[in-house]
Amino acid sequence: MSAAVLAGTPQAQEQKHGQQTVAVEQQQISRLPPLPQPLDPILQEMFDKRRAQGGAIINLQIATGHAPKFTRAASTMAFTIRFDAKTPRRLLELVIMRTAEIVGSTYEINQHIPLAKMCGYSDAQIAALPTWQASTLFDDKERATLAYVEQMTHGGDVDDPTFAALQKFLTPQEIVEITYTVGNYYANGLLTKALRIEVETDGRETVAGKC
Image (tube, rainbow, N blue to C red; front, side, top):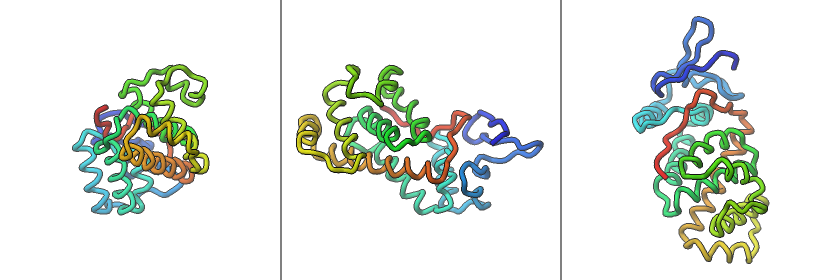
């Protein structure tokens, strides 16, 4: 969009079109039309809760809000990955970043770079992630996990040596959590591309949680 996006609190985020101010929920941020107004009660409850948690309403939620029940279900999975996993959050963010790179989702990469940094990954590690096999910046556990992500996202046929290497570092529960995380963010990445969801340029981020 050509109008400048105003930064501010999540409650105040809006965009100016000439003299008209448009709330973030009413903007067209994908190839879909703006959300119908007033918002569906499911979306309104979601958005209110998200802001109460200190997060912003991001373009992914606005674009997919045309299917409120699906958006709510997707949000539940995202929050399960972020807040209820046994797998260390730092490792999950590495999985998400690499999955987003492989699927080519600029949107997800933009959202998760700050989260990866929050979890202690350096700019050098993030820059090296696309060619992690040749990098010395990742430990053995991270490399075993990245190898699993690489094979899962390229057809899903993970070979026995790669899976055996992963089992040296992770419990069955953690392996399932990582597998769900890869599948979830691969699908999300395709969705952001198919709907052409715009990358936020105003610093809006979802609920970050802790690492």
